[in-house]
Length: 313
Length: 320
Image 1 (cartoon, rainbow over the protein chains, first blue to last red):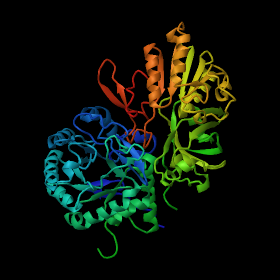
Image 2: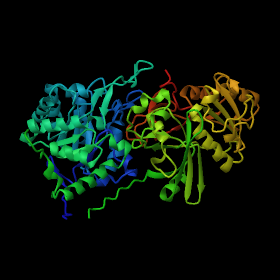
Image 3: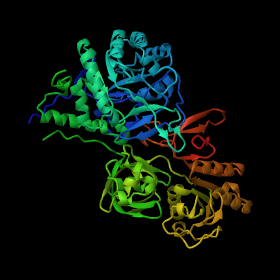
Image 4: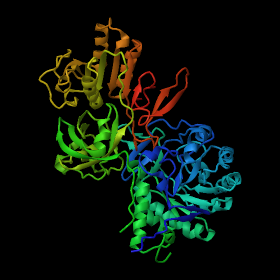
């Protein structure tokens, strides 16, 4: 059997060791996962969101479990740009995977300021623009649901990016995700990541109050996966394939077969999110499972899987 | 032959279930055995540290053995691991034995009751920071509220073996006698300090019981017992005393206040909803004071705690 599988993929002009990432907000900044897995076995790593100033985040409860999923409303709690540079960047510089910094803010200027400051950092492959966080009052998803704003913020941030890759993360909480995907590409996005979480609510029937202090939270986990696969395929067919823009597919991936579905649907790479909470080394296990699938199916590289959904479109 | 993918799972361990038995109305006790690398890791387990237990692959028990109150919620699937502290840890050479005392309250703990001797459990740990015993302490006042018992019981064991110069006294509170998470129910509690609670008595630790409804021991909050003891022992050097507490946040707040009023050191074991337990999800925020400042910050229960200095914690976030 052919054991020489080329696991590498090209993603927005960067060669990655393999197509498996850990998703923003589920893997810390760099060091948190190192105790539980070999981070250097990943293809890519996306940091927790960074904002210009530190953010406390929301009051608790910040999470609640649902069937095959969970809601979170962390509220972009993070150490802020300065501490990120001082404490986390040196660790990131030692990592082998392509590292993307997830950037959030409440104004376009804040996004641009963070990206400008980090654009010269050699240790970074690029940025992921978070315009889809459902858990903050200003910024986040309010940018991501209006195509005109998506294009404007993408253009402004892209200008500050220099030679770095800009991934724009899309929210599924829109009528037609292809419209926002087109807007991001028009603004200069090098890649798209989808999906962020779905805005959702769980109610405590004893108190008749929402369980989360933030009332609503973002639904993630296996429950969202079939919707995410559909949306990746939709964006791939309607927008990304023709534009030559790669998709980072995510939403409920827990196993290699989940990841492979996303690749077939049109993703060039995939990210593991919620599943890392349960099995911290889930992403690296998926790298192994993906390799085994390629061996079994006699495929030279997982790159060959992208957009190979059979049957009528 | 496929490529071998070695994954480094430093914190993920398998434990053999030695026994798993009902220990009261809604309480169960599981004894776990760690060997090899895990045996070494858990030999270093400190009271107050915790584990994340995976129940997602476990079956729901047969309908007839599901308590009525849980029949509705039991059908929900489980995704996330659940945090637990151990009530006892003993080391026998390369093997470490740990007791997990748990209350059946929802779909995950209900599934845990189906584990039998010989089964294997998946867990991550030891996690977080446990209780510490500062030098110079001569008396440890252990305050338990309901299911806050396990880490305090574990601490009592540590004190009785490694800190023999520290006298431990336990104050054990619960809503009713039935909600005391005790395996062996003694014939009577008189509300006074005695060796009537076997799980502490076997360690030579005197204890006092309080229940909200008076069905056992003192009628009223357990904090009244603590305050009374401090009143009766007001001549003791406050520097030689330390309070350790685990239980509902309201109780912890009251304990912290009693300790603060008398300027006695106090460590509290906190609880929050957690998705991961290892600092990834940022769910388990605890509001903490900043020294010499009116500002507060959120710390993480999983990484910065779960044991905190009581002076640091801003209580009440989840008791409103």
